[in-house]
Length: 307
Image 1 (spheres, rainbow, N blue to C red):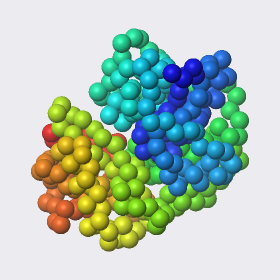
Image 2: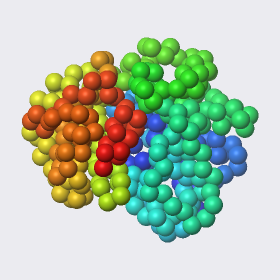
Image 3: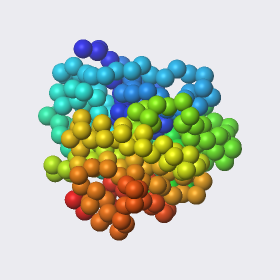
Image 4: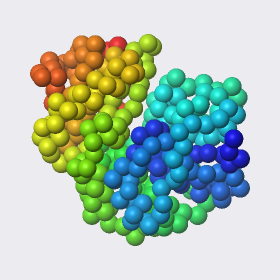
């Protein structure tokens, strides 16, 4: 068992998961904790852009934790999205901005959740509350996460707190938000060298509502058509996941970051839930969701309320 307290975000980590873990590591270290930021999956290209910009290494990869291991969860709380063995780990604290579901601990813990657009916005406020210094590296990490999760403030998840934090962090990091943010988002839309299996797992999360299991994956692109042309191959990989996980529904969102729409590929034995939730009839397993860019706010709650 690791001696350090391990800090990590969800499986198939996005920019907020990685940046939050690294920032939490710095804040906890300043507070005297013996901690280490780790990750539960491969680094995507958007996040790699941030790490390259700062010339820092990604946290090390772990695949499971032993019983009794002390951990801190950032950017998630649902056990289905966490590391193998999480049920028997000692969860010291959680910092998150998602719904709370399928979560239980044996002991009290520090739990901080706010309905913001990004976990790093919460960490920014915590750093200020505790009068901890925010250096350029941490400011860049937090700013990057906010711009990523809010799609440059265009996502409906974005709040005034996210915008205010981003403006303060940009001054510390000496970063021009529009230029840096668009470069970062564009880096994440390069899907050219992913296998189709990797493509559906770049940012994929499992959600369980009662006994209903749904997998919702999302990729960002500047051209939906460029991704959709591989629909046959993508669906083959989706079917593999459905079979392996006994999922009732798999929704693959292809999100156009320029026009703020998503094309959904939908498979499973309960596609009726999707059609009812969004008032659409799937054609060739697909539907265009106009104005939908947020899985957290515009997709998961809508599907959950129709199960």
